[in-house]
Length: 306
Ligand code: TA6
Image 1: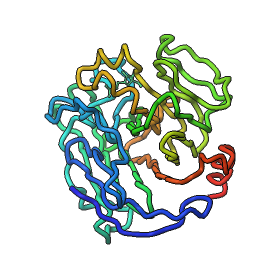
Image 2 (image 1 turned 135 degrees about the vertical axis):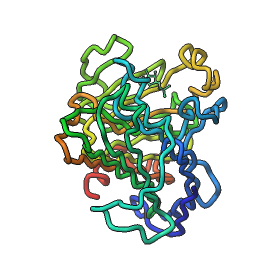
Image 3 (image 1 turned 30 degrees about the horizontal axis):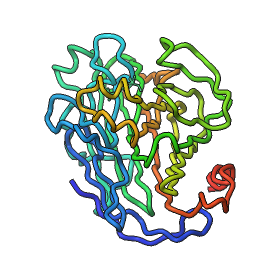
Image 4 (image 1 turned 180 degrees about the vertical axis):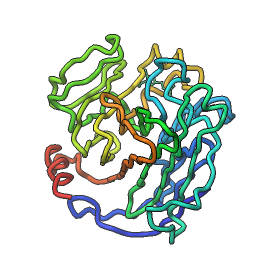
């Protein structure tokens, strides 16, 4: 399914940019697997060894992790929603009906098979839209069961980078995080930005609603804006782990980074008929920002004002 959006708008700092032209969303996993700008530049990462079959989520793009983001318990890692065939949602209420080809509503309902591994009836909806140079996700989970349930959730954002050792993530300084390389130990970020010189696998807690992923080499900033998803996972497998992942190229770690919107520390609890709604915006800003003209902190300042 292809979303189309033609437009022209002013990105941060008054730089001109043309909005992304189109995105490709699969019914399998409701996964965005491609997002391109007017120069046909791919704005999302896809593994050089991605496997396109229904066995497991395609490695890259934006997989949806529900009803858990972890590999604990009996569920498959990061839940089953990304490994299921979704359908078009014709009843997106209370969201307004779709009026443009740049938006799609998809839905996944619990099946009898799912109930065997996760005994809770649910409706998981997602609205994905391309607008003004950004890609927007509105995930919703409705409890259609007769008893309460809780879940964790993440939008796993695989971003392409020119050289992982030249990338900074800003907005997570001083925060606590669970370090998956230390068996989930709770730590506190000491650095004023996250940089990469080895495997990093952390769930930052109670993060700001805006995070900047700055790619010096390509002079590109990704802005991640999120609501109702307080945590953020940052993951790069580096060389050893990359070699151990069959559907990830051995060298792919150099040109990818995951920065995910997530609900991890405090699972969402829903009573019968209750619905949770989140929101994520991914904005691609191509500018000469890194020619030393602007201070990285101003990126966050701009983002705070908008
Ligand atoms: O970032 C959390 C994490 O579980 C990593 O430890 C790594 O295993 C990665 O996610 C795997 O994600 P995948 O998409 O392969 O299930």
